[in-house]
Length: 165
Image (cartoon, rainbow, N blue to C red; front, side, top):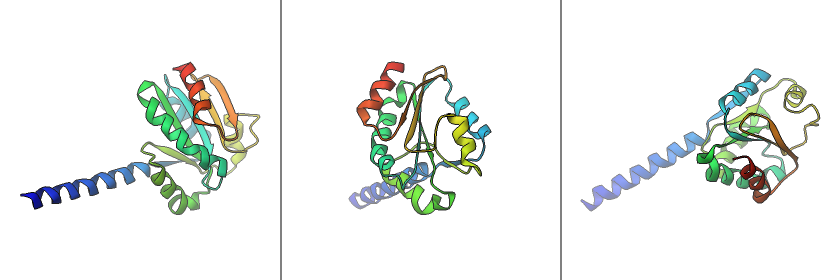
């Protein structure tokens, strides 16, 4: 009986681990402004933080765990975190997916496949020069409330999110 329980526990842990890996790998491409509009449409009525980042960007990697922590702590309060990776699509399986898995990301993330990156930049913010990390916080009505260029701390993000919740 004890062996049966141990086997069941082991199988359960393996299945749970596989589910976490699959969730972390729910990564969708963004190839045009209609794809970005669809994201905005899907998060209507929530406070939204959109973060543009890449695995090769040290400040992005440094702030990443703080953003994941925000998502986990405020997701049930009407907050939505949207990661948009600017890694090249060829790095999807070799760098992006392993990084997201390691960080415990269990929600949909996106990566840019825009042929002309300036189209994405112009759509998001006409003044954005493409530097990352670049973060945009929107209120529940979809209005831009705050934008950051460069890495920030958990406390800085949390302060601005709490004001809008």
